[in-house]
Image 1 (cartoon, rainbow, N blue to C red):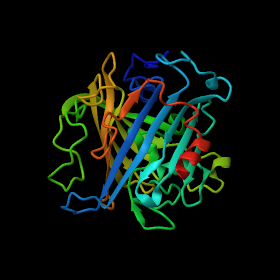
Image 2 (image 1 turned 120 degrees about the vertical axis):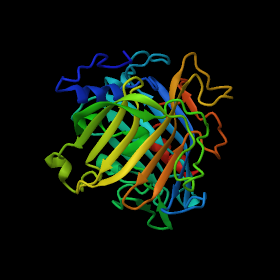
Image 3 (image 1 turned 135 degrees about the vertical axis):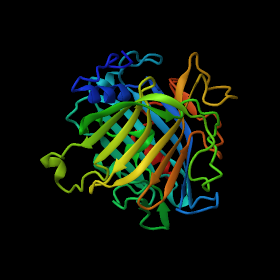
Image 4 (image 1 turned 45 degrees about the horizontal axis):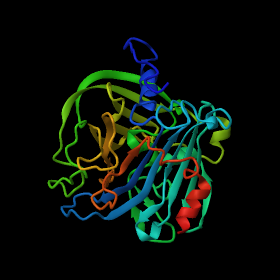
Length: 354
């Protein structure tokens, strides 16, 4: 059944932090599938006063297809793929529509029910014209050139420098495999978070050169503060691997909606490297004037995410919907639009070539 695996939590339980993370992993944002269209991003250099980004990028789709706990779209409650191949869910981010030098870039990620089975990840690079397998731990690096191990900026080998701080493991606050980390509860604290966002698309802040989102609605929320530490790689994972770039994260998780409101990320030297804030809305449609994406009950929608590299000062802002998106509604949840056939490495290569 879809819902919190652990609806009742005891702060004194030594496993409470792990249970919080499983509640986050099964959060009620979507149960069956989601198609988030024309996700828009922009990166800004430190100290800039201009609202013009140094980089602007857009993905045609962020798609999610869940094989377990399905509630609205057949097959219900479990897709047979969860039993045979053992795939828990599929996620895709492709094709990249901007900038032109990265047209067609994409990522497909398959997560498995077996805790000992690592994610299968494919990346399509338009330069090579083919999809290739990459190690799951490489998704802690910035994108699109995952695996460059460059930190704050991803570098396109055959083109200009591509400036971006956001790594795929930080999508929606935290997208790494839950079983790859150990967890410790730091505390349960009332803290400010954005849960009733008023603007869609999210408004660029006029006071810092559009590096963040403002003004916006903030409120006091009860948050679980959880420390997540990456487990050491097994011997077969260590071969040819440089490990994750972000071995420790402090996650701030809403105790009602089970989404991540913010995250502090630390490098291998224990220094604070990046900080993330998410902006969210709770309503029955992603935008007030929606005509298609209208739901029978309120849902959580992430309207924006800000990823700030504190060591370099580079900031990346992700919006869904974006200010330049032609698809104004952006979020399509449990409508059967996202399919296994689309979230496939072969389809990513086909889409990337055209």
